[in-house]
Image (cartoon, rainbow, N blue to C red; front, side, top):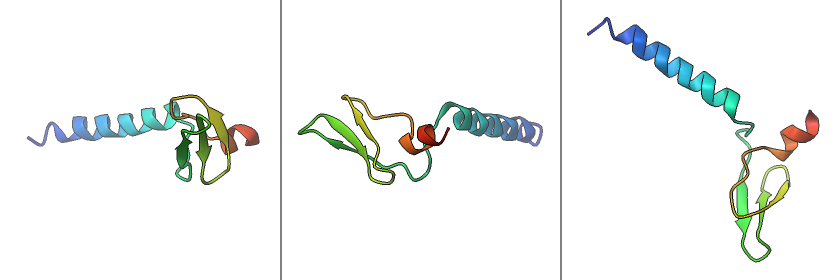
Length: 65
């Protein structure tokens, strides 16, 4: 049983590192959909994105780069 603990710990750590690298969202991003104008708005930074799907990037982060 104890032999699997290091493998489990390594897998969980690897998952968190992978998720950190594949997402540009910050903890503050709060995207809200406005269906009247078919637009997404971030309640934190004020970013706007058109389209039916929720944005994957923080507009504040992309402006600062």
